[in-house]
Length: 273
Image 1 (spheres, rainbow, N blue to C red):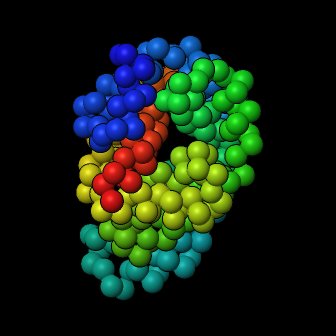
Image 2: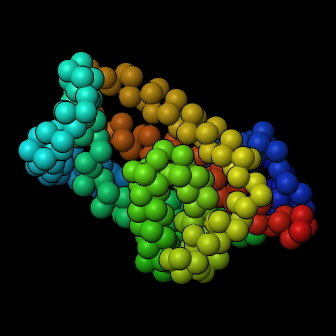
């Protein structure tokens, strides 16, 4: 990919999905070393903590199940037939350990530093600068409180929407999809990042939704490919750390797709007005 032509074109016109995917792939290959270092600096400690602190999640899930058995289940039972109630209880118990991810929630605020460094790196390249691990983390740390705040607000909003009905949660998820990029690159505050993302998505919701679905499918396929060889060893601590780190490394490709989409939409929206 001709980087000079790319940095000009991304400002001039809207890229198609294949163009965005190819541009992200080209950056991923060209700057793989930088992306690799950014990822392992954050991902290995985080994945170790995730494994070590798993008992915390187990206790939280056990406590939540205990409360549910005392308060939620008795309220649900009168309005359901026996088969439906048994299915509900079984699915609830299976999904609870995934839903009650207390450790993952807090570690997400550390993991976001790697995502921010990748966002800064891509922005530097698009602006004709030089990508480096040190500058990426330095800038990420300077904007971390704002990005973490935006991430928290968007997570709470989406979770609230999902609890009410599924569709409002999906709408809010797409609307706030670029809040981290906005907080990192446009120097917005917490709420300002959500509003910036909302304004950018306005009138393009279906297009952004389609792109999000495309990325989610791709990310899940990568996760499946990485996890399948280790399925018999999934409880082995080194294997879990290794597989989690490998996924984080390759997930950088999807982070690049997202930030390039953000920049392309942002650069060209004045031309569409």
